[in-house]
Length: 66
Image 1 (tube, helix red, strand yellow):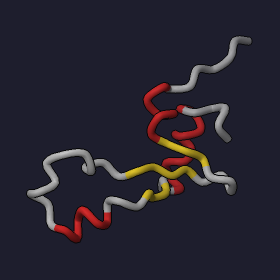
Image 2 (cartoon, rainbow, N blue to C red):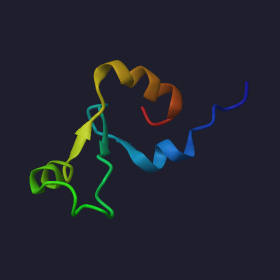
Image 3 (cartoon, rainbow, N blue to C red):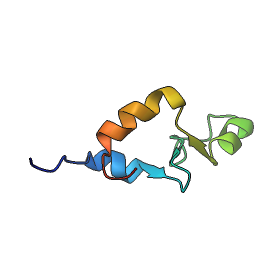
């Protein structure tokens, strides 16, 4: 049985925490931020966790991370 491949785009964007949760950085922090409110820019700085309903999909995309 061959190994499953990891989606290379996913491994660059998502990280698995020590407790098995998946975190990612919100998009929209590179350029064209002057149109957004400061509140919106500030909230998108922190990484957020993937919802529990999407973790099943993440396990298929990144099989060797969990």
